Length: 246
Image (tube, rainbow, N blue to C red; front, side):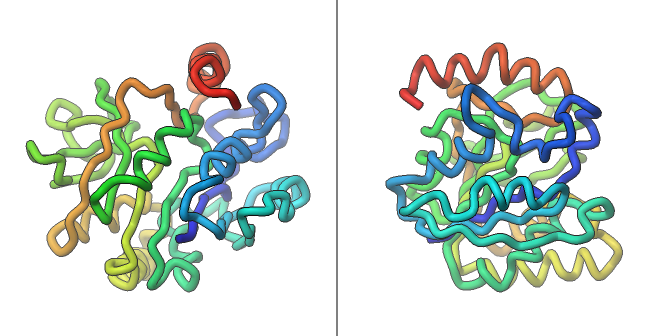
């Protein structure tokens, strides 16, 4: 199995807080955020990680290189990172994920290592980690049935009807990868390169079954805004290290 981590963005919503670093290189304790994600994959079936880089890519590549003996790292460059979004970055990795099972990460997610472990161990082939919470307009929201089968996913969903927020970690089966790549390409070709990749997932729900992995209760946060970073540092990180010997 492979992993695809999207780390191309310029973190514009965080302003000057990152001191010119890619968001995923912000440190928590003595490690950058991205390192925690990769360490959470150690001991799993994942043996190769593709990191889609863009903004300040050399900082990421120079730091990580091939530092993990059990994880082969490779880098894919999104040169259009200022004018595109996650759908374009993930589409760039298509030649690597097609015909492979893969786990997906947004590189700005700080979470307990049990989150990706539970996604990987799920009996379902296509899985999206969600946290039950009161959602607003900004969150990627999920509607599911009583069995946890996803019926809709996207930012445009009525917050009052959603189960919770997709927190940026998912598992995809090899069976859908060609359709997934084709769907993203159609959206991009129609001028949708600034969409989130979840738009393509939403379009696949009539053909492929996706299920939630409800990780509510585990410490997790997607860092988009300054207040997210503050909560990550003051609350989420402290909970993680108190519960897990990282």
